[in-house]
Length: 521
Ligand code: NAP
Image 1 (cartoon, protein in one colour):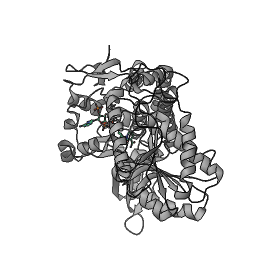
Image 2 (cartoon, helix red, strand yellow; image 1 turned 90 degrees about the horizontal axis):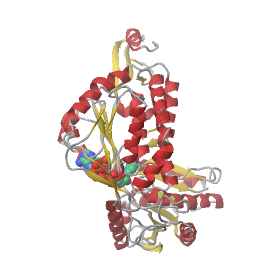
Image 3 (cartoon, protein in one colour; image 1 turned 90 degrees about the vertical axis):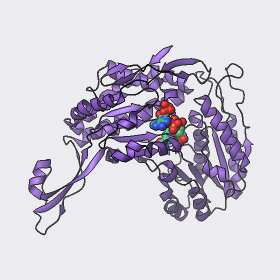
């Protein structure tokens, strides 16, 4: 069986303890093992700080951008192989696998271009000089300098390629080396990506390390210049935030966690706007078998349109073929692990106990196509209706990470929609579909503060709008409250987390010369 290794301190290393096993979620066959036991993670971080950091910091943004472009090309060279691994280890259809892998490539490409555009500078200048004393000689220059530590990236199981690349792109462009830890259960894709980078010798030593398997004692070795960017469940996020060493060293922790994303049909929507809503609900429920942090979990519909929405979403879901994701005639595969299936089943039971009733599909695995009887971690698409939207507590509190969404009737007012949306306690994204402009303006103001991103779709853009689950490198990704309070991507904004804001205060023109920026005032 394939043994996955870690790439630390500039070389491939194997753990020596009990190995974790990775499975094919369609057949339940074991496909690989990995272990991190016995690895010297303190030495791995020290190596990255000593070699990776200086190697990156001596490069300009344009040169770091060129490294990202080289990463993109090295990974793209085995795009087909990566898609195959995602089908095997993630239960992805080819379409799902491309969504992850092409998302990774596009994000690397975006940040490569951004680096090129940022040119010969090595750090970010944070606004114009502040005059402290009249006359302009005594000034403060705000800059953002790359932190001198390592960016530890801990990723979730659902996007092994994109998760690795989106965090790496911002960190490396900022000038900070990376130690990336994919979720163990689906690490095959991330492992292969790093193999490609190592085989092609794309990055200087220490710039990118990979920890394949359990996190071990990694956090015990963090220092005050390191950062942790985490994506996963709220529970694990809280554990990392509260880790003794993280607290003692003041290590910044970025958390991207659970999210009860909502979509809202406004009281007044033209046909093309309404059609976009139905199309997007279908995508969000079935893409990656609903295992997207940005997937729509709650569908708010004015009471008099509920029957239409249920009928139209159901018609689309009826066409979804669930089964072996390697087959071209299959649209949705299994969820990625046995644990995820168990957690989805328990979650569906909790939603139903809270008053939600199936209006399309039934809880269970269905009859997946091309799969041995009883095998595979399948969860059938399920649309629920909670007649008492305010009373269905679990629908607002529990993220069921699968092809499941709940219709919530509301009275058509912005106030009622906003009150229901806010019950999610902070989400990554809300999408609003409507054509009454004052209504939309009011909704944006009322709903916005509970989200990192609000997608507003009207008839003018209905045929071009992306489904809300699509995360774009130029736009902020993250959300307040239970979504973790994190912020990633957003173009140059994504570099903030990896840099220290410093103000150089004193003789303005002299300091401007030291910093290589134009003097002002
Ligand atoms: P998870 O169980 O919290 O695991 C996430 C990562 O944390 C894995 O790499 C895991 O490693 C690691 N980990 C586990 N225990 C740890 C500890 N004590 N210290 C440090 N790291 C630890 O979450 P998951 O099941 O992979 O992901 C599902 C969740 O992620 C969903 O709730 C989803 O909403 C969320 N998610 C959020 C976003 C976003 O951008 N907001 C994106 C994708 C997913 P092992 O695999 O080795 O245990």
